[in-house]
Amino acid sequence: GGCFIRWLSFYHREYKHVGFVIGRYYTATGQPTETLLQVEASLAEGRRLKVQTEADNARFPPCNSEWSASSGGRVWCSTKRDACHLLFHCPLKFAKS
Image (cartoon, rainbow, N blue to C red):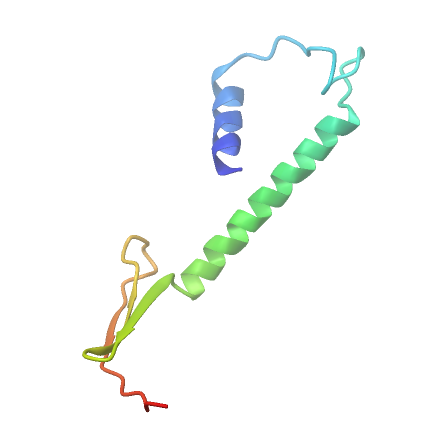
């Protein structure tokens, strides 16, 4: 999804529009077909989901965790995003069952 959106943006930015190719996406009068409308709706949904994911990642940083009997538990969050500069070390003790 994201790669296609970036390519489409590049294409519209770098190439001059000279017309439409009649077929799957455009009618003989240059009107979008139902297929093109569905593609555009999918792209819009992809953009919406990307924005939502970025907002969620800013609020809840992507984190990892591990646990072993010898060292306990540890949680760390990615530092590759601006919103994620967190590092936790929690030597947790768990009851054996």
